[in-house]
Image (cartoon, rainbow, N blue to C red; front, side, top):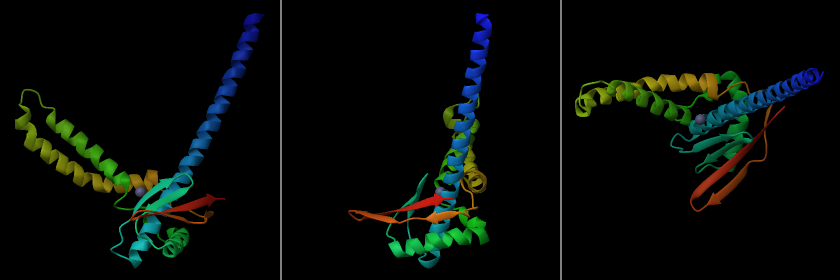
Length: 188
Ligand SMILES: [Zn+2]
């Protein structure tokens, strides 16, 4: 009798757990979706700002509530570019991908590191003897990582489908010579 009760409680527990996991998985999927769209908006905003000021140098950082932009940008121009990014991404989805994104750096480090590791793992040869091969492999790794970073950004870390997004009140902060903006984004 007690074993039946135990079994049914176990079943309930498993049900509750799988329910909680499903809820958690759905939440994290929702969070990832938000971050991918915010990331696309960050890149598109930087592209649009750079079209008007080609010498512009800014660094962006995407979070779940929007994105930060560090660099000397006028707040009004930033608002205009961010609003434009919302509509332009529908017409030009490639604006979601940026060549100087951290994704590319991470992929480059990973591929070049792996290539060097494989090239350097030869038995019976001195480390110095494998150095030219390791260097060549790293160089090829860096070259090959560029298109790969582009693909990873397009397929995994950004999403250009930004319909339903709304830009909130942009906050500007100044710390010494460093200007930072936070662009809040909300989703329907
Ligand atoms: Zn990026």
